[in-house]
Image (cartoon, rainbow, N blue to C red; front, side, top):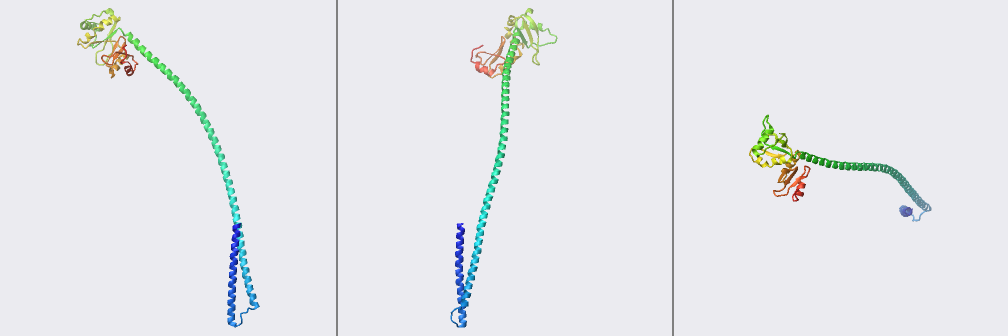
Length: 320
């Protein structure tokens, strides 16, 4: 408002100055007219009452016109102030409405956000519950698996023990048996007579019929004569023949004598012979043995032993 008053004061001052300037110009014009008339009429410069009245009337009209202009400008100034006031009021109203609208939108967004958070929390709670259920179920399954694993280990241990026991019993049942390899086979042969004659001729052994429980050929490797299995009555009869093993082998007829070893013990001996750290492997008196060096101590092996572990652990240990 102070700014508007200053503007009006400046405007009035300017207008007043302009009015005085116009008045001076009017006077100068009047003097020029009078001078012209004086030059034309050669009368003295004294003005008449009528001229003075006319000049005053002109001045009054000029002042009235100037006042009218000032009044018009003042009205315009007042209108500008009103317009400024109206604009300010409109801006204030618009800002207020905008703030209110923003507040409503924010409140609505907050409400929607809270609703989404609530739904999300419910979902999280449900997932946590399901996760807990799954965790408990997995823990139960893990316990069941551990039980099954323990049972499996127990069963595996039992199976290995049963397998070893079965092999031992089978081998024990063959302790008095002898296998004769390399005896040519002929159709319709009398196997007992063939064995008796060969032993008598090669090893100078007389085979008593009372010492023999059974004697027959058994399946063997392809394209070679089938071995002859001799089941003897006792270990003495077997020992009498086995003492001649070297004589039979060195007779030059391709024959050799061996113990009747089970399939699993034969496979074990083969694995030992194929091992890089085993020098020698053999069967003796129901067990399988091996050496890692020519002068090394013998190590007894079972069909389920880990050869590497046992060699590393026992190759320098006491013999069995």
